Length: 294
Ligand code: GH3
Ligand code: MG
Ligand code: MG
Ligand code: MG
Image (cartoon, rainbow, N blue to C red; front, side, top):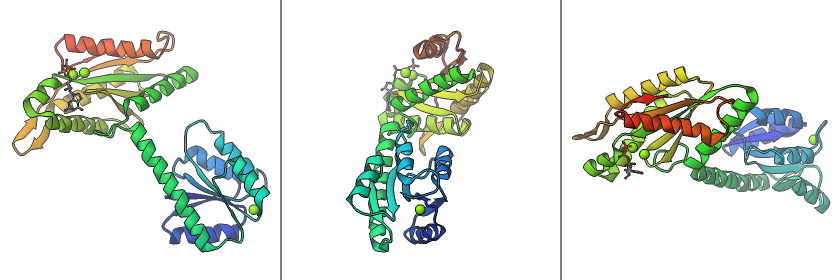
């Protein structure tokens, strides 16, 4: 687990780095609050922070307040490690947003157990976050999360005058798969589809399971023609790479895909845009399945 150390004193930084490494953490350092904020703006890995109080520029408590004002839902556990001591300092630090407080000079054993307590909370938060945002069967985003990413994409494309494409993919005659091979073979097939999606999409494309055998895919900075190319790659990969359930059971699947490209002049809101891709999917189903419609 990464730990961000924010301290203007080089000796303290070195001592903390050595101790954290010994305890199995990966230390990251910032010499002041401004550097720490820059780091946290681009690097989403540190969730456990050790922050000094007195630093040139922004102070530790001000840094805590700034971090607590973030609206991106990122979780941070903050330990304030400071030369200050006493109830007034503890109250001020924790009112500013610190989760824990330790005075310098600190006892290494005390810091160790405080960091262990903080990392338990960070891990718990990560587990909760995973449960709240991922689909338990396939590990792609769940409906709640893909809806949230979808509205972010619309807000961003509207603000920046850019575009993106939306794909809705539905497995053809999936009920028959369950009826023929059983529900657990159907589950394997769903995981296989997500595997094919992941290897055919870019890192920044987003996949969510919207319903039983229906997936929503967001393709940032992608127009309709490019989306078509991606969809065709996926459609044919699914058709030609069967789901291997066991040595003697292979399931051949096909999918139908509806595509829409976001147009801020045309799509009045999120549901109007979704509706266009959904209608395209409906047409793909109506006109014979195993096909893509824009
Ligand atoms: P169409 O080509 O028109 O999409 O037909 P379909 O059979 O795929 O569509 P329908 O909506 O009639 O059936 C979807 C099936 O997906 C029914 C349901 O049992 C199955 N299903 C939904 N969720 C799961 C799941 O988590 N696991 C498995 N194995 N099956 C699921
Ligand atoms: Mg200092
Ligand atoms: Mg279906
Ligand atoms: Mg369906």
